[in-house]
Amino acid sequence: MSTASAGSTTYLELSQEGGGAHKFYEVTVDGQVVTVRYGRIGADGQTQTTTFPSAEKARAAAAKKVGEKVRKGYAPAVRGQRAPRAVTRRQVSSAPSTARAVAPVLWRFRTGSAAFGIHVDDDRCWVGNQAGDVYTLDHEGAVLAHFGLPDGVKCLVADDFWIYAGCDDGKVYDLSSKLPFAAYDIAADVDIFWLDIHEGVLDVSDRDGRLTVIDHEDEHQWSRRSPGEHAWMVRADDRAVYHGHHRGVTAYAPDGGGELWHTPTKGGVLFGWQEQDAVYAGTAHRVVQRLSKATGVIEATYTCDSAVYACATSPGGRFVFAGDAASSVYCFDRDGRRLWKLGTGSGSALSMQYRDGRLYLVTTDGSLVCVDASEAAVAAARQGTVPVARDVKLAAALPTYAPATAVDAMATVTQAPAGAVVVECVQEAGRLRVHVLSDGYDTSWNVQFPRAIRRPGARYVVDALHPAAGGFYRVRGDIRRLL
Image 1 (cartoon, rainbow, N blue to C red):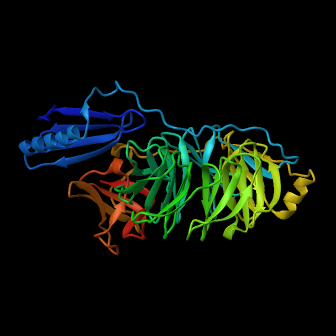
Image 2 (cartoon, helix red, strand yellow; image 1 turned 90 degrees about the vertical axis):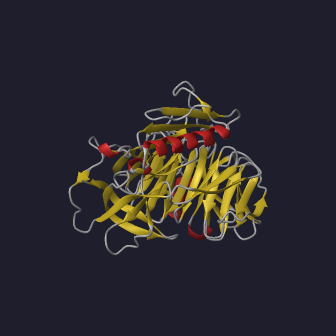
């Protein structure tokens, strides 16, 4: 077994066949300082640094860490010899629509790569694609900002007014300010399919049909293996986490207390939506099914003409929308009666959201499409009258915001501006935590903060902090290092 000595680095890997673990663990000893780096093979991973009272204690602590990993199956390796595991991307096909009429598209923005992620709020529309691009637009289609993330965007989710992007590099980025940061770094053996965040708790569904739950401090809480694989749906609220996979939908207690109910669906689940009292599962067998959150009973079925890639509802489930593999979009009433079917004009919708009389789609050709879903516009479209869709263009000098990956790349200030909040990194029980120094805050609460830029004793300035359920603070605005 390799042992860690002063001025040495020990590099280990654990790689299992059949889609299991594929991760590394590296320990470096430099005098009294031990640096541990770990994550997915091929990625930079997370780094933790600890200073010990003496070089001897540092070597002993490093040797202990290496020994623990070897006993778990890790083995010495050479960095870079083993390739990163391929990331699963949804394999989709998109046929031409059989609908006689085309949807009344108001505007269309082409992102340049197939897009899964969408979120629409009061002010902006968000779209993320497989190239790692996230764009924000206003409701009329003007492009406002561009975020450049390191890997493909699987999904975009909101938790209050925070917005997060789940990416193929295994990280979940907070995009709530100009400087995005990795708020969560998911275990190296979790291949993200979809995620949801509720009151700071991250719920991840993956290729193997697992549900992994992680708290705001990026610490694993619990996990469950559902009856089916390929879990493309996860939705969460106060009462349960709803997990959709190829054998149906399973609801679990939020605290990990166990399964609440399981309901087989008509076909494997490809997408999910939720309202206050119901979850909606779009399936490969051409239907959307509405399930009671309380009991799991199927309350209604909405039948399409091809596999359902996406679904959404208007508030309260008054109208139910679906997008299928044949580039069509549907609208049903609450009880399941089909009201209309129209072609998208831009491929098949992979995700969708309804807001204020408009239906927003992201499609297989990488477009964000805004459809006028008002009764008058749809009636006119069914008669062949549709507006001329406006193609949105990128501004020539649109800035790109990338995640902070190193302290040296951060903006710095010599004193905190008026109204700003000062936070500090502190070492607690072997972990770097972040606490508030400014007056008016509970100094015992942790701050959700990017791990990549945490340094022992370092102080940072943030624009604002907001308390979250569960007793922690979230950053609002930019982060700068205080010199």
